[in-house]
Length: 460
Image 1 (cartoon, helix red, strand yellow):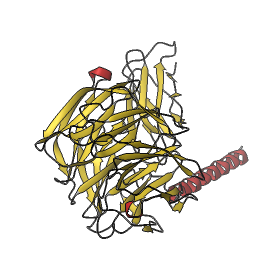
Image 2 (cartoon, one colour):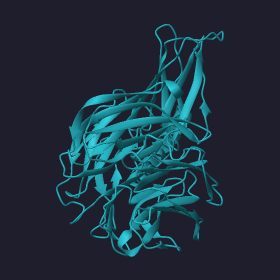
Image 3 (spheres, one colour):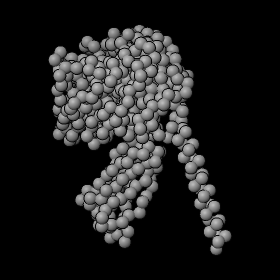
Image 4 (cartoon, helix red, strand yellow):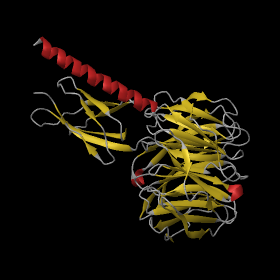
């Protein structure tokens, strides 16, 4: 018996040692979070960081800054860099050279490697924005000088111009694809309105939607969500700006609510991973401001969250959330540094965490920022019942991943159902249930990219 216990103990010890080694290797390959990139357009260089999603700390990546082929441009757009998270590609506009540089991203190290078809040669113009469709098969590049958008079909080895979409009025500012990839929208400043298109993800051919252009405009900070809603910020006069939300029916937008603010120069906007908040960068005031999103469809409402929070930089130009939505990062264009905010996922209130020293990301102007998550946010749902199959209401379920230390919480409804909306693929979560009258076994779960269901039954 003693010998058997000894053998069992040794085997258990070996398994524990192997797990610790694997965990150590995982952590050394950035298991704590994604990669953050900043584009210094004046210096034609990219700065790269790994993100610790437990603390928000940024660690410079080896091999950076990385030179960008070509030269920067004079506009310093917040959308001059964007990421294809599905195919792990980074797109960077070098407007002075009329090109888009395309890099593959090493998912373990964050290193960038130019793809065979990079750089993509653009028509001469003033290129202010590059956007990627949900599958990465298309990119859209906006040209403000010629009021046009260029749609390219992307494969692993090529980029082919599929269509040039002319803009019938002045000053196209930004564009975006719907979450399902079936529609494409192009916004503008002021009161001109914005246009919508149905688009073929394979061919890149876009067809104008009936009723275009739509008013009022969506403007800057153009974002869409899984419900087909459109969010944007627009300056309608020199005295105020509006954050707006539109619903869509077969791609056609209808304004359902807006929230007005005193005039501020808005540079960029981002939708929180939970879909509960929309946050925008106020370049002139060097701050960030959020609105809360409530309701669905035609009942969607926006409520301002005050006050705005100072970024402690200069010319706050672009922003991104991390994959769990507990941190918000901004690039301060003229200070060439990143500000990190803690972001309360329940209240939508950002609080100052840290700011890099001025000039951390080179000299000149650093307007662009992009983030690659190490996983994809997915749903986890299920039902909690007693031993007889009856639903248990009010049970509290926690999901904790040792890789980031974040605790997600859900509560069962009167029918025993619960839902988590922000778990990350590829991470293992420990799920525990607390309910005074029942006992439950702890479970571990690793979500995939589909809708996941996990049920719990109380011990008899």
